[in-house]
Length: 181
Image (cartoon, rainbow, N blue to C red; front, side):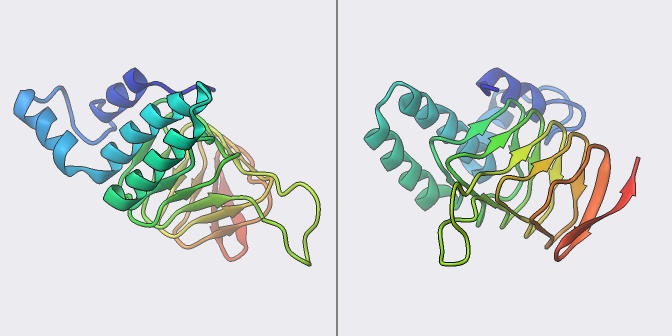
């Protein structure tokens, strides 16, 4: 599920992306200079390649810089498909084993990660798998080896600890499916 820069740019300038149509050169420069979500994804694309080339120390250092400048902590080992949009990068955390599909929208303070190791949880922590065309609104937390199906929306401030089927709307703490299309 290797992501790519071309898919990110196509989604950014699509009818449903940030802009309608192609901006001029100054519009493009403005987006690259002042949109931290765009900057965070572009930086991730660069250091993810370094990570794949086994330049892990450099990739992890650039990940820290990305966090410092853009507020998004995107681990270089995460797999993010093309067309990912981080609308507001502040507080976004994407862990090492997370797999994100195509055209996913992520809003501020979204956390995607493993359960971690504690006295209450043993074994492989597992990481979330996010399908295509998913919307993760502000404050969503998805932990552990759960799958969020394609074309699904998770409402703001929801805690997802169990898998959510495709074409669903889920909300709450813990998240529950309230509508399936």
